[in-house]
Length: 293
Image 1: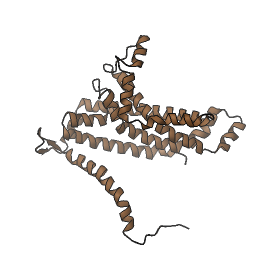
Image 2: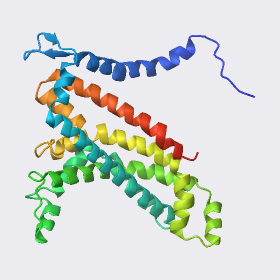
Image 3: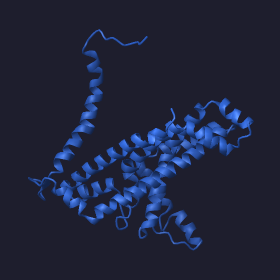
Image 4: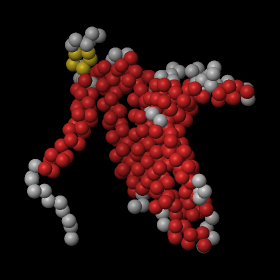
């Protein structure tokens, strides 16, 4: 028998959801609507008046070589951050799930980086890899490898990927560990009695049962790589050198707030919004089929 909550006052349900609806409208729908509206205009240098250009900002964007290259940079950056953050988190969660002595301390230490803000994480990694004073850069020089992410685009990309993935590993670790502990031990023990090795048990039993958690984290990590890594990139490379680490969300900031090209920045925001929406739909449409609930 289905149980339903009945309110005495017909307006009370609307009153309870009103704060959430207000927050969603103010912080999502209103900015998104403003971005779509502003993408059709070009303001004058003093911001006193605007000129309607229709799709002119979008035509300019897709004719710009640097903007097209930022798509490739974003794709490489997002894939590397998502894969490395999830793989390391899963590996650590499997180890933590098997630890018996001192497991509480081990898990607490692994969760700590999640409390660090992205900008602070960027500063920490910048200190370690500073070409002149960083301990890691100095150690690499002892082996004959010159590290200078201010001049080398590949090194800059590696550094922002490492810092961004390190920041997200703790978040993924929490969910993977909870998923591992929810798997019935009797199933794994039965496979072990039948002679299945740990690797076989992991790929045939544990990993398929973790697929709902893995799918959720895949969606979250892709969105994190697209948006929340802005602080890491801004503190470490500021999009350089030669825009080798300029992902789409950072280019929105650079063109809008640094270059004062608000029309182009608004058009980029609309493109980014549509792109993330398409990626999310594709993930739910095709990847979710492989998830076993």
